[in-house]
Structure formats: C-alpha cells, structure tokens
Image (cartoon, rainbow, N blue to C red; front, side, top):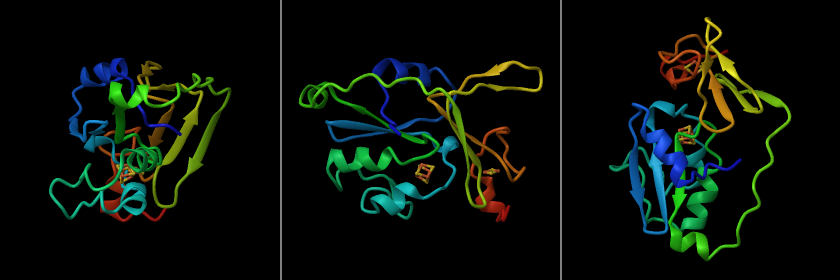
Length: 163
Ligand code: SF4
Ligand code: FES
C-alpha cells in the first residue's frame, strides 16, 4: 500500500474541514490528519524515533531518513499519515509506473478494531448517497462507538472494545 499523495490530491484534501498538520525535512512532507487515526500503532512500532506520542511534536521528521519514513508511513492502514515527496526528491528517483485499479474489494477484520476495506469499493450512506473516500481504503467501525460512523475514529481504544 502506498500513502504517497500528489500535490493535486493534497489540494483536494485541504478543501475538507479535517485538521492537517505538516512536518517537512525538505525532501518529504508528512501530513498528519488526527481524525483519521485508528491507533493501530504501526507507525510507533515501525519507527519509534520518528513517531513518538510521548513527545511534542509527536512526529520528528529529522530523526530518520526519508526512505525509512516513507516505508513506515506506507504501513498506516487509515491514511492518517501521508506524504508528499519534494520535486528534488522525486527527480532523483526512477518514475513509478501508474498503479492499476484493483478489481475487487478486500475486507480485513482487525483485532478489537475496525474492518479495513481496500481495493475497488463504494460506500453509500443510508440515503444511498455516495460517501467520498480518499484513496482506496476505508476503516469501518465495528465497535459501534465511533463518532464518525461509518468510519472508525479510534474510539475502540478508549472504550476497550474486545469484538
Ligand atoms: S492509524 Fe496510522 S497514524 Fe494512527 S497509529 Fe496507526 S499507523 Fe499511526
Ligand atoms: S472500531 Fe474504531 S471506533 Fe469503532
């Protein structure tokens, strides 16, 4: 999974009301969207020197190299952390081939947490209106406690869900 965003994708995200905090080391800019975090802890386990909630700011973009930071951000299941490579950094790397759109949807039930839906899918509300999803991933609340239903907002941690 890639959590890389392009400049135009980022402009779209900025149009939403979500809080976005940016951290940059000149090569890569990390975007942190707290409302999207489902507290899977992949970032803390993958690179504790960079992602440490006990510190302020909790992301230290200078504590590792850009390649490692991007590798760990790509493991964030909810896209609460994404990144944009700077033009300088992009030209020093070979161009990536465009990703093919997935044919199917996959649903991964996480332990005591949300159901992660990835691939090709659409989410509609009770009125059958399409809900805009960013990227090809959605974390659907399974504990019933989210204030952002149908999406997970991390409340399963606070309520100690054991579903
Ligand atoms: S959802 Fe993403 S940002 Fe939140 S703890 Fe997990 S990996 Fe980190
Ligand atoms: S599963 Fe995360 S808030 Fe319900």
